[in-house]
Image (cartoon, rainbow, N blue to C red; front, side, top):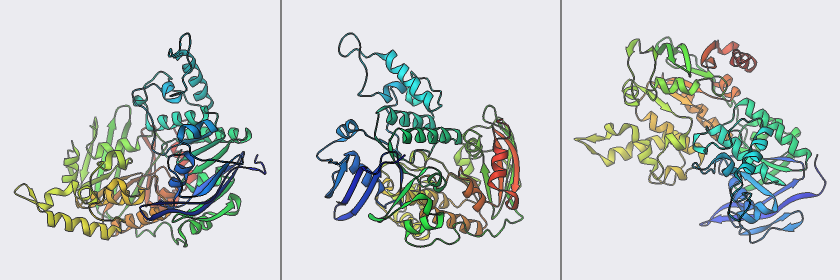
Length: 500
């Protein structure tokens, strides 16, 4: 239930970094009890705007009014005290502290003497707080032992515990299961009834349609429009975000070829998956679908030699192979792009060039020495082919925006010249324009005869891009569907088959 008087007004806000305008005359209005979706491609200025709102950055020009009063000369601590909290996409946790300690860090309750923390009190408060989110996590457990999804729920609980009047949620569901997303959405509805205003940032259009009251769009650091969510369908929203219509978001499939490049039979890893079998053809995109915890990533890791198999067989081009390490997999022509590009796909501090060539250095070396000109030429060619936007080959890969980081990680795999590529959540955390480019790239790979095994939690992506879909539920395959029968409803029915 929104009120007529805004709780937050941002007007004429501008910010430059080294002469480059990140924000140019941006505006935003937020009411109590409203969910405002802040949309735009990566690089549109969303993160910069939120950093300024939280006090992490200072604006060059413009004004921010909170409950009618200007917000000036403040830091994050001041912002939190005023009742503005943020759930960051990059989790800000202290691994060695407990769940409860992380939630109440800097706000611990004391007993007896000053400095004596009342642990039992914060444990009890944490248990109650997590219970409202439908999450069963031991408040005493160290954060380092939690999954990414569990850490995300703890961060959400931390924001709520601040009694915030405005909560900024930046990609809050990126690592959550469908059940956890449903719990979060219920919590958001409860917060709305209490008058809490929410700024919701997500690239998942289905979520925006479900949760948002209003949508504000930024493009290239400029304000484009604010509209009621009910007035914007998917195509209209995409047009506002990218400045043009994207026809055929999912490129037309050409169909798989007869040659089977990868076969797996009865793959088993106790406690993770059991009796998984499938064939992957040249020129095919085979989707691996299922709920979080179904065993999709575990199957991919086992095929690539990252985790050991307890049973089953793997065949490459009809020949039985034993893959005990990624080096074995690469030697047999298999490439792998992990779901966490920042933790597992890139090395912080490494340049675009060195990241691209990391898995294929043997192609640019003689007598143990790397030929710099050959390596640079290969990197330049890949940057050109994938249209990677970078200042230079020497730019740090972590300085690129999400879609270009993902292209670098895919380029690294392609330079190793694989015949089979495993893509685990290839478009997680990237905007619609970058997604479209990744989809076109995947189709270009299949047109060259490369076989693609793709894991995705986004059902529109699975149904729009895949030639066939293998569905897993609790580590067991429950269906193998052709493109014509792979509807979202049928995939979900098979995904929950053994979870009733």
